Length: 486
Image (cartoon, rainbow, N blue to C red; front, side, top):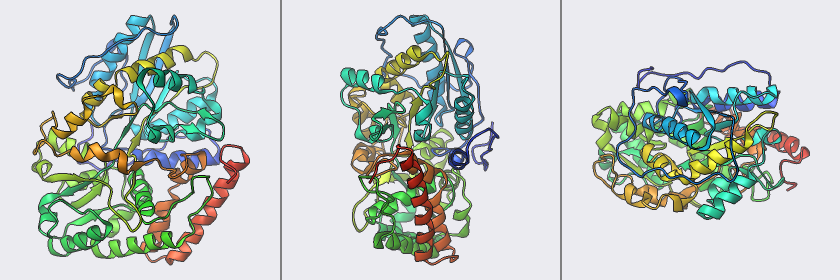
């Protein structure tokens, strides 16, 4: 296993894909440790599960609902190795037990998250996928033509558990084709993580609440303590997420609610100019070369004053007994000139390949079983995973207000109870359509900000180049009928 503080560079596996898919997937592959530090890829079969990590003690019991039809055969599942290892120690026996109850032979293969996009693309493009059910933690809209419509699963889940969150719906549903290309039963919030001792020293013990606070306080901390901010401008997921939040909060965006490209605006220029000033006053050039683990490792090493991330870096600090754990606190989205928004940090998307011999019935029934048990999912992820069907986890707010996993103070995570007020999907205010997914995968937004911050282009030049690329991508997908006509 990789040491927790090691730098992990994502590996790109070769496979036969189109240029668009290659660009999307190589960008997405940088997701390694998007929510925590990287871990080794592991392969676990439900029939012979073995792990050195124990499931979380206590918590809600699992429950069972009879499948809607008789099931048989095999169900092969491919998913990431969770950044909270205790989740997988719980998940594999959970799957095994369900398979025994319904008469299905279930196999679970966990692989490192950076390898998941290539694996999914390879299986789908082959026409003979090795797995019946595939999971990834970012949007999979680019695979819509090759996957089973999950409308039946969503409809059944909503009839049992109430309406799905709009956040997850807009990350798994294409309103132009009226197809659920994925089932998204869970997600993860993306709060600010800050070192209280450092921000107390600049008169902000509750951390920054606005982008002005971030600039002024972060610059003062950097000047007096030599500790920089952790907002990346690199071609990886956290930079992609953070810079979209900055744009939205300044009143900018890539598209409007009708999927018209709107990036060329005064608000975008203002956001770029802000990031130029933030970089000059509070950061170093290393932020241009970060991978997705860098901000997590940096804050746990005491080298960063603030990052935008899930709670996994903090959970790692807790698990390893690091002193910094008690110094890390959380903030909601920062207020900008127009609003305060961030993107969901993780979006669980489960897809079923539309190919011969895929056990569609078993895959869909397992997903309903998973949705039935979102309370154990949240508990065994140590509150990393949040439900898309809130009724399934009635105790979540109480757990967050008084962390059962030993936070000091116990209400440290309470800000997460407001996450739905400031979290949105990467296509905001429109859906996470295939064009948005490709733009994300190609890291066009981080490159735009980085070129301006490095002085390679003026803000106007960086924006013009980004707009040209974005318009071409939208035109291409719109021509395929997968993006709205505007």
